[in-house]
Image (cartoon, rainbow, N blue to C red):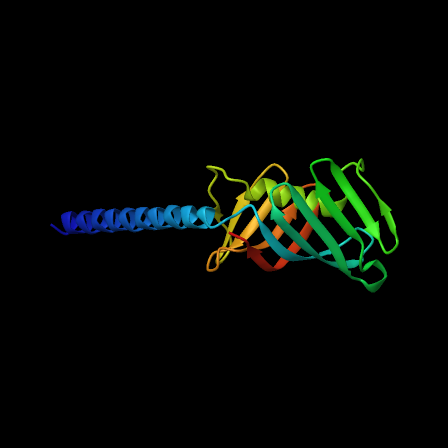
Length: 175
């Protein structure tokens, strides 16, 4: 009799655990779909990263439409005003009175960041996955984008090449 009760209690615990976990999985899938649906192709953000030489950089990123993107360095002071404009023909770079037109190959860090964000935020069937704490992650070929699970906004970009971690603040989607 005791053995039957113990077996029943174990079976009951196992069934409750499975039901609880499957309920979490359904909620996670629903939240992942909500997060994915909230992403857009037009956005603005402030980027914070450190270069390989140890220079802390802050830059603004504006992507008003999928065909163009502008990244402008705001800090440090000696690089403030360095501007990259990505368009279908290539990249234009300007700094103070100097400018260099289209034809520059894209692998400059600001362009790599803009392209990685574009790829990760592009419409897709890929759903974000739960990460640490309240963070969710959206993985792609170029890197991983971490989303705040509460706001749905991107908070960090982890690039595969160059291996760089970029904090994203003041992120706004222009829906």
